[in-house]
Length: 103
Image (cartoon, rainbow, N blue to C red; front, side, top):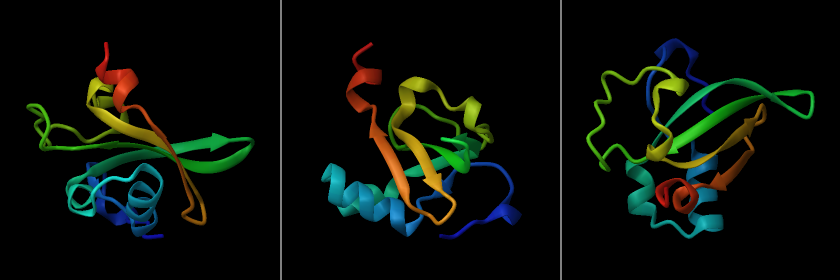
């Protein structure tokens, strides 16, 4: 898992484990996955530390990526997948494309 704390806040390219999970579990085209980005923040799940993540496509909508620096700034309707990354890099993701975009 590539933890890049030195980069500071802001959207990042997806780690390899997340890219593989999106292709294998959710059947997302690898070319589309390459364009996705994510934001993260510290969190906890079942008493253990994790990194909470929100995955989005910057090509959809009129997002100003230079203005989005933090997890909370990403509009809910822009989120395609959300979940967490275990500290060993294992992703646990939920598809929220239909529930969020149906509103």
